[in-house]
Image (cartoon, rainbow, N blue to C red; front, side, top):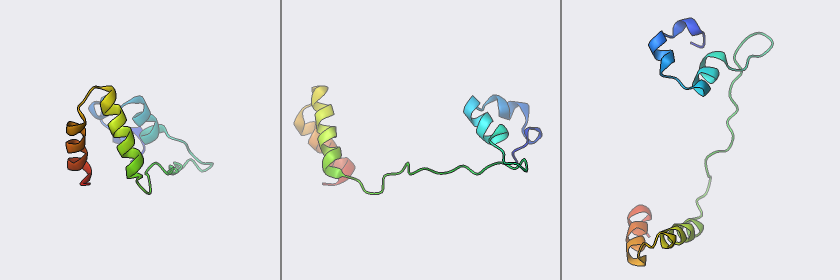
Length: 80
């Protein structure tokens, strides 16, 4: 389904340039087959909650949000 003639005009019109390139054009190997996308480690394996909490509270304080409100939001989002 990577050939342009499988897509209707209104479907292509809704795609971004990046989507058009990756879905339709894409990189090809010597045989003309689409190369598979290499997935990079974009997902964090382990969350560092202490670091996230520090960043959360520091950012909140920069926006003058009271500590009590930040603590309540942190507990709702992370449960501790």
